[in-house]
Image (cartoon, rainbow, N blue to C red; front, side):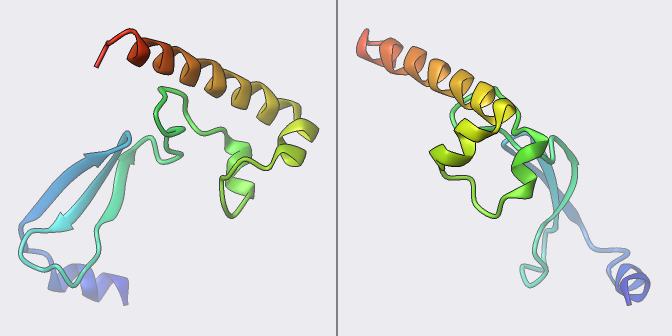
Length: 99
C-alpha cells in the first residue's frame, strides 16, 4: 500500500518545515495528507530549553510532571532538575528586562 501511495505522489511538490529541532515534509498542494517526520531531533526538546527529551520519556504517554515518577527515576530527576534550573535562568532574565 505504501509503495503504490509513493508512486501516486511521486511528482507532487514537497515543502520541508522545521519545528522544535524536527524536520517535517508535506505536500504543497495536498493538505489531506498530514506532514511526516524526515529527520532532525525526533526525540524532541523539553519545551523552552535546549535540552533534548531523554529516551526514558518515550516510555510514558504524556510528559507532565509526575513527581512520584520523577523522584523514583534518577535519570528523570537529574534531567528535570536541569530543566528547572534553566527555567529559573529564563525567568530571572525576563525580570531583568531581557525581553
